[in-house]
Amino acid sequence: MLIMMTRKTSRGVEALGSRGVVGKLVLTLLLALTAACGANDGILKSGKETPGSSNAQPSKSVFEEDLGSMRTADFRFVYVLRRKDGGKIDAEDRSVIKAQTADANRRMSSDDDKAFIIGSNSQIPPKNMFVLFARFAVENYSPPSPTNTNANANK
Image 1 (tube, rainbow, N blue to C red):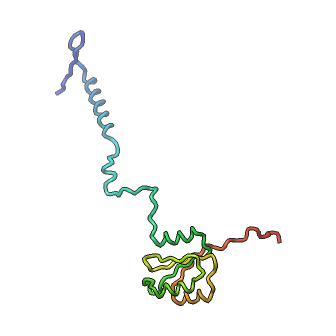
Image 2 (tube, rainbow, N blue to C red):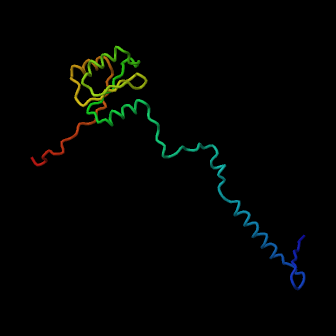
Image 3 (cartoon, rainbow, N blue to C red):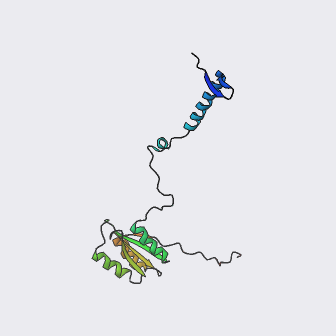
């Protein structure tokens, strides 16, 4: 069954042909489909975590901050001492550290008393370092020694 549409004009009622009705229907359908096409953000984002701010830096541990403060102070020698058994540094350990690093510029406890950071501008004497190596696990974080840029390359 074909339905004929009509429209009212100044000359009277005029019948629209089937081409006019079909054309309008197709046009309406195309507009509706075009408006409906596109990505659904809800579906695209489902199951994915929203990433944090790209400018956010990972937070540093207290130990990294303490070590960074030694580096910022420009100490020529930076050592980290830890007990070999991994335990906390006690009062006896502190007295040994203080006695063996008397000339150090800075000594600080870090990592929940499991590490002791030494910063110095003068080298700790070898006999004192021997005592420290015997008792503690020693990590050397000293910056590389500067190279002589004034050396004569034309020998």
